[in-house]
Amino acid sequence: MPYKRSDIAKRAGVSEAVVSYVLNNSNYVSEAKRKAVLQAVEDLGYTPNLVARSMKTGKSYCFAIVADDIRNEMFAEMLYYMERFSFEHGYSVTLCSAKYDADFIKLLLSRRFEGVFMTSNGFSSQQLNQLVAAGTAVILFQSRLYTGLDERIIVQNIDFRKSVYIAVEHLLNLGHKRIAFIPPYLYNEGHSRENPLRTASFVESMAGKGFGIVCPCVGSYEQISDWAQAQAAEGITAFIASNDTEAAYILKRLQEKGLSIPRDVSIIGLDDTFASTITTPAISSVGFDKRKFVTALIDNLLHAVKGEPVANQCFDVSLVKRESTGQAPDR
Image 1: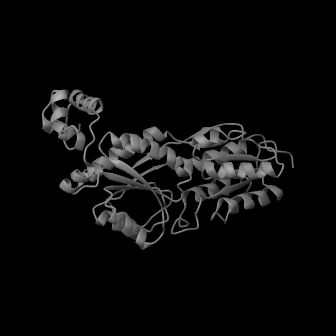
Image 2: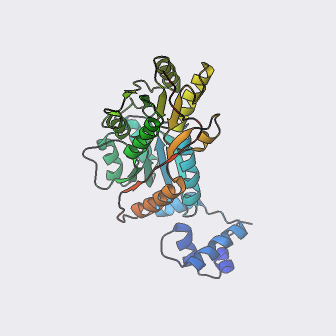
Image 3: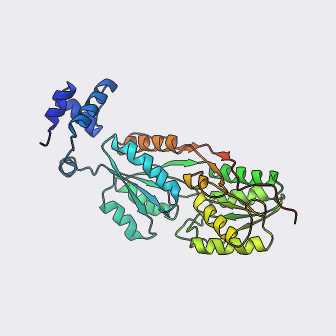
């Protein structure tokens, strides 16, 4: 039979108000009572009527994560933790593939997401400001410089400049002097080509230390692989990819063309996702603690939707050396 909140309260030994506080995450409840309520929910298999709750409160109890390429495994890992941590607070999460026009922003608003984690940098400041002006909490995974952002937009990102610098230094220390950099997938879409932190860091890190070239075509993984193949034929000995998905595509293409990784060419990514561990060879990468990042993200979203102040955060990155990077070949 369907259980009611009164049944949860009776089993947990608390009042119905406490049950409501826990399920709606709307007031402080001691950790002991919160655990008792959640255990009672689990024991009884209680399922709240989310539609009725939404109509009553005027809240959607849903967050969105917007990504340029939902095939990028980094977003799958983030979504995994976001769903787990959001569910504990009565929220669900939707992963959305970005479309760079006004209609997409209108769609986000029509879905009444309470909070948006914007990992795409293809939208203008004006478009992002439109979201917060409508009452949506926005946390931006900022990998480029913006002007005119609404002060209510929260920035939570990783040290993009440092991640590229670490990758460049790793390759230079291995003797590589001809290095190529692959910007993020769909870098040429929307506004993402403006003031990119990763690309700027690559150019700065390579200055006076060797020959560096930036891939101009990232509209598809096929384009990226074609370009990498051509550059390897022209003497590039190492590639830095903005994510491990790009790195895996390049690795596969170069291997198909008879090149040995890392004997002939070295490859490094910038995500440290699960995908980097299952290729042969495994891919070196510069990553960050995604569980720690998403724990802070959900906490910040929950505070933001309540109108509480949230400080900007930048998470550190570190090198994970695997088998895809090695000493530069003699050429």
